[in-house]
Image: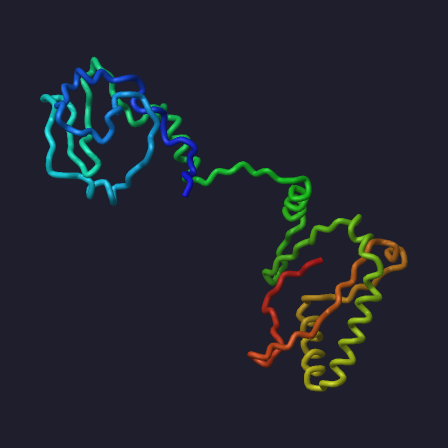
Length: 232
């Protein structure tokens, strides 16, 4: 899996280290013979595997020198280097920069890039969303009048489907009774209202959505939402 970071850190070490000053034994096989040369990090080994690589053999280069540890990958040099040489810092970035990046990652900071349409929808929601006395939210649906005009004659299509539904219900009196009770209950609860189109509004863009009768075979009842949102 690719790393989410393009670069773990800068080259390590930051400058070339004088290997002669370390006085490493010549008979040990280093895991990285070029560790004194600046280079990129090839792989990061997690703590769950790191300690399984360590072997018993180790020694220290002088009183204040680094530790030379044997591993299954070869000998490695760990710890502080003499001051006059150079310190192979694991972290070469400014501390404040690292802290800033850390908090940005923890807070999931993302720059919101919204299109004009999404921005308009967000503003419409902030401006029109209200809550009525019963605790239900009333929201205004965003719409594009230019697209509504392209829908054509949706009323005749909705009427045809309604008449088809009427014929279907006539063949099943029980279902028709339950459907009628559900519609009237929905009306009494205020989840829908009758719309009267005034003469001056007839020329405005309109779209009619057909209604369907849904019969739940599992529960053998018409499902009723307890507290739906009102959409206008």
